[in-house]
Amino acid sequence: LVVEDDPNVACLVEEVLTENHYHVLVVSDGLGAIEQTNHHHVDVILMDIRLPIFSGFWFCQALRQKKNTSNIPVIMMSASMDEESVRKAHQAGAVATVKKPFTPKELLEVVGKNSL
Image 1 (tube, rainbow, N blue to C red):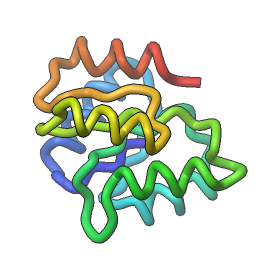
Image 2 (image 1 turned 60 degrees about the horizontal axis):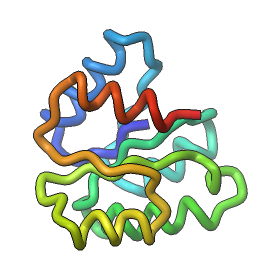
Image 3 (image 1 turned 30 degrees about the vertical axis):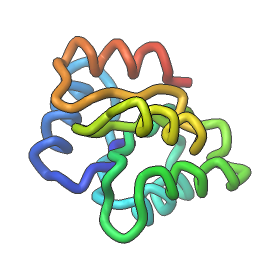
Image 4 (image 1 turned 45 degrees about the horizontal axis):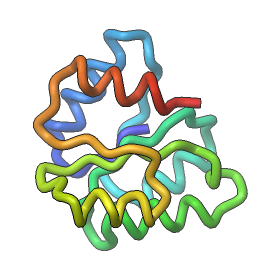
């Protein structure tokens, strides 16, 4: 599941993962992520930190509190992935972080290492 409000980034991530035989769902905000995880089995969530309304940190914490989503690995993405953002991502429950822009190889490595 890709949670990204920038359509260009979402399209790029979807394309790279689809070309590598992943089934990809894309939503633009955390509410969509919660809705999708209620209706689909999800092996990993790639979530932007800066989302409309509530941050990716907030939604990551919310997903950790729900029984059906508490064990889904969350990878946080951001163009401003500084030490503070990495710390906050892990505190929110993320298993990994990736800094934008990333290469297809970097994306596939982080997803491969952290999916169920």
